[in-house]
Image (cartoon, rainbow, N blue to C red; front, side):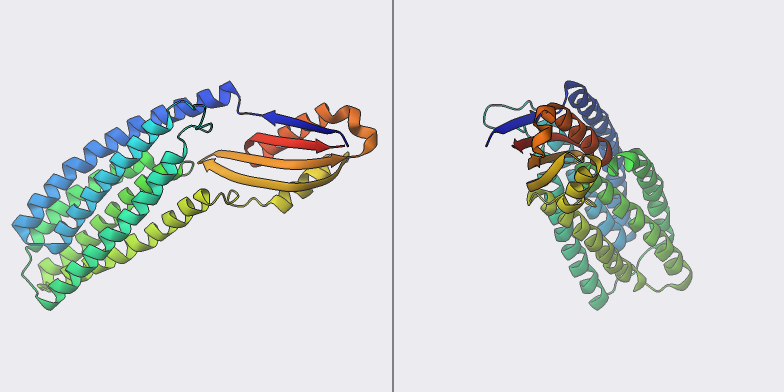
Length: 301
């Protein structure tokens, strides 16, 4: 039996595009960090002056988001480090680790806000509704700006998605606090404040769970979402009749938008002389249909 091994790494052009993408994301994160840090200071002062637990909880929440944005920024800087002899894929997984850390951090924030909200329900305190509303409106405007900055990148990058979810949680918090402040101002129902804090914690927990699952799946080398080895194998055999059998296929995610595949391929004996062309057709299909650019394919004759 003759065995031929072919390997196709990512091209220099694709790596160059990835580097340009990372540069853009760094600028977006720095701008969002500046915005988030400024509003966090405003909410801390406003929460103290108005005695609003919801505002203070949101300020604490924003601090964790500021920290999370910093983690995401640092992860991108680390991921841009060139590969070396013993880290052949480079440090791209640093971004996935950052997303995992951010999800766990969100759970910690959720637990604290939930605890503080229950404690305030048991020991209610008066809240200055009008001032609370004013500070929450400022927070909403700035959070919406941050969402618009990160929105496009969050669809393609798990690390940025983690930062984006932090900012989205802040935006939802601001909207809820605005509604609560209006109710408190007109009704005097101070119990609304801790109830809002508890509700915010539940929303954060739901988003954190989704981010945790995505990052753990990548670390466990699960196939990209919507892609299975059986489907890819069937598509290749359908498009390339010379392929007789595909086995030992493995597909996994290195980091966001960077997929790898390994497989053993058996071809018809009459097509042995066309292995190079078959390989090119396989790589073209894998790239165009599944965005898999890094492949290692062994042909079993």
